[in-house]
Length: 150
Image (tube, rainbow, N blue to C red):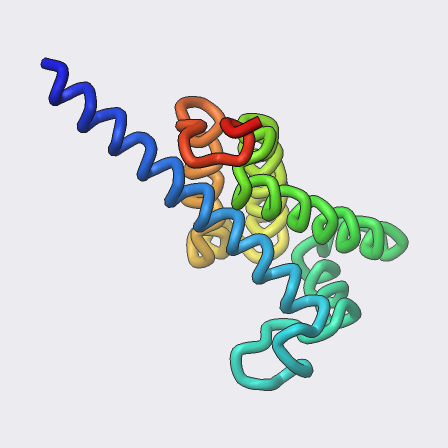
């Protein structure tokens, strides 16, 4: 019985580490792109290339929102993705970061569904990422985190 519990514990630790890395790095790469770290707009592998391009995308995703709200939404998303990306990768305040990420992904997926149709957030695996964040918040392991060292 002890061997089965050890295997289960190791599996949970590995799934938590993988989920943290996948979510956190995805957030950080997205922020890096919109800040121009990968090149100019329309270059290969660049989604936005500038924050202004990202705000244009933000306006499309939030087509129902008034124009004056777009800079706030784009800036808030960027700040939160940076914060959650760093905290997830390092494993700091893991439960808070996981539930915050789930909330942000829920809002993003909902906005995509309203503006582009329900298929869109599934095409980009937004709800799969949301479930990964919920997993981390509910049962994720604190092993291999900076938080566990403090």
